[in-house]
Amino acid sequence: MKTKSKIYINISLFVAIAIVIIMFFVWPLFGDIKKDSVDLINQKNEVFSFEEQMIELKEFSQNKKYYQDNFLTAESMFIDYKNPIVLIKFLEDIAKDSNVDLNISLSSSSIQKVEKDVWSSIFFQVNFSGSLANSLKFLNKLENAPYLISVQSLKMNKANEVTKKGEVLPAIIKTDCLIKVYSK
Image (tube, one colour):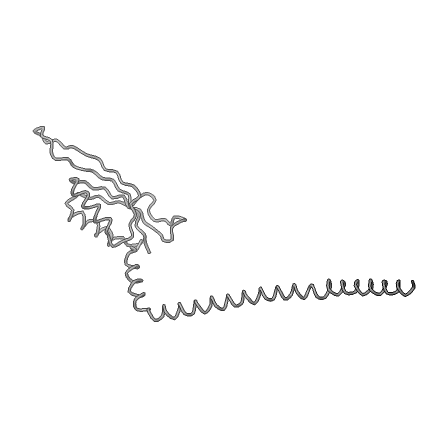
């Protein structure tokens, strides 16, 4: 029995040592291998992403002339907030072409940058009056303006005008419009 018990003790000791070796040496190695493989995959993805960015940058550089024209066009859509005369002249010209009477003033909120907006903006109160067709013509030209304009509010009222003789003139539409114009 002594031999059998020595064998059992040796086997138990061998199993215990094997478990200790696995727990303290082999298991951490597998963990390190797993961590290193994840790091390697991340590095490969970063390199791949960097290579894609380099290719896109190269394509962008090759198409620089095309993009430059687009940037210049986009830049012309913003007005200079220090000198909005160009916009005011534009509004006066389309009012004249549309045959409406125009009154423009800076809104009380004037120049501001709204948190959700990317660009600064200027608010103008634009009041005009004319026939319905002319008022709609003015609004259409305003909508198709070469500037970034957003209509914040629009109120249209019919105003009947009576002559001294008591005759009712054709309906005049009075329009109050608050516009937001994006600036540089």
